[in-house]
Amino acid sequence: MSSTDSRASIDPTARIADDVEIGPWTLIGPDVEIGPGCKIHSHVVIKGPTRIGAGNTIYQFSTVGEDTPDVKYKGEPTRLEIGDNNIIREGVTIHRGTVQDKSLTSIGDNNLIMAYVHIAHDCVVGSNTILVNNASLAGHVCVDDWAIISGYSLIHQYCNVGAHSYTGMASHVIKDIPAYMMVYGQPAEVRTINQEGLRRRNFSSDTISVLKRAYKILYRRGHKLDEAIEQIRVLAETEPALAPLLKSVENSERGITR
Image (cartoon, rainbow, N blue to C red; front, side):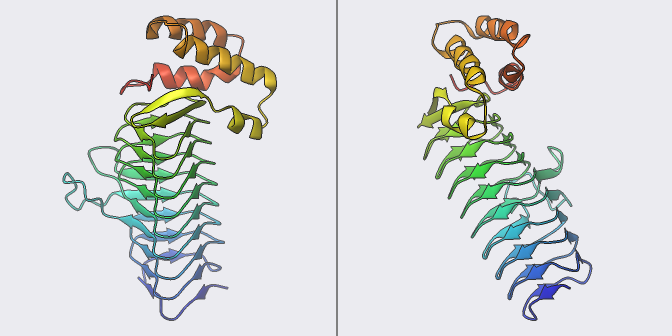
């Protein structure tokens, strides 16, 4: 049975599963859908159109689904979609999209979004990511699965953060981060592969060795980018783990951190 504090304010058109817990002084507006097993703490603001899946926990003072302050935004009914089993900690802000992109900000499953993180309009966050305290994503940023963005890191608009990558504390990211790479600095530079993260996710020592080899081709042998890509493409024919790296480099429009 739903457990909604009488001091919460919920629009009658909001669609909320029967077992959702909602704390005092929370505001839930129209065009909001919240799936089963969610817990919304006190003083949360959720505006629509927003869809929140199952098993999510949102902590106090977070603002979810708010209009973007982007000057292009003129009040269009853009959307926010959040998947399942995410933890959204205190003071997080997540804005809906703009019609100049796909009218959608989206967040996948099993993410840990820590205190005071900002996710701007039109961002796409995958699954199993960690965004540490005060990290900020500007508009149109894409964060792939299993990436970790450390505290106070700033990701410039339109940047892509590759799968299994890692940004060190307070990194300023102004270009795309290829999959598996570790970056830090202002501006951020690639230092090595995210070896410890890969070990924790049970990547084999052989696979890690292959990724190290690809890293050296891309960053340590003085190749032009096209030459490095061609060599990694040849390796990827027999090493499937290189596919995300190759894709993130080949598809980069902003240019990779290099």
